[in-house]
Length: 286
View 1 (cartoon, rainbow, N blue to C red):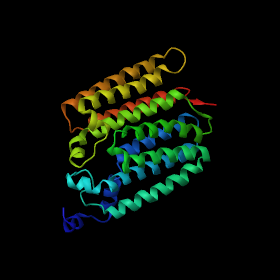
View 2: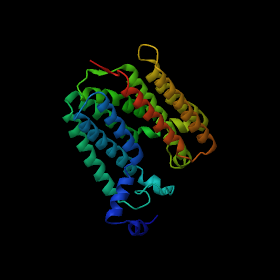
View 3: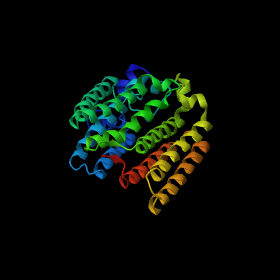
View 4: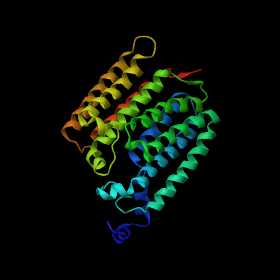
């Protein structure tokens, strides 16, 4: 891709804004923001739920934009049509600036929820940036997902005035992160290999990644249903069965259609079910 072809492909006006939004990884950004806001509302956060949602949104935007900024050359090399920066529709400088502005906004909004809650969220977002910068190419590529998603319940709990989050809520978040990492990487395994990226899924192979991701997603739901004291009510048990069906279906698609993004969509659906289960449980402490 030449500089002239890249420049000629750039769009202006409303379409340019749309391209910039698409470079933020809007699906995961919206989903994680919705999950954080829902947890805050369910925990009785009131107006603070809006602040939590704003902080999470800023953090997710910074993560998505930094990912496309740092991967621009790789995405262009493999001809990713779903990547506006790699396709030359958004200048790298623009998305780099957007990522940095969003990161600053994330720090300000996070600390506005309280210094301890703010530090927890900043660590979670910094972990995701660490994935984009370095760890996605290593055997530890799963670790930032586990840490960032595991800290989300703790951040929300502290931000709404609770003492903390139950261990099983944080563990479920970590497992969801590991599962989401696997399903997110699966469609891009070949492209990543071609550009020198070899994270944990690339090292253990497609089949092991599919099985491991499914186990992590199901393990997260089982924790949310079974870890709280007392026998699980019928509704959580039913949602556990739904999560099982969605997870198995996503795994089957991943094995049959290597390029499909449906397994990642399935992991988001399982995460949504887990958020519903958390909202209906006593997942905060204090």
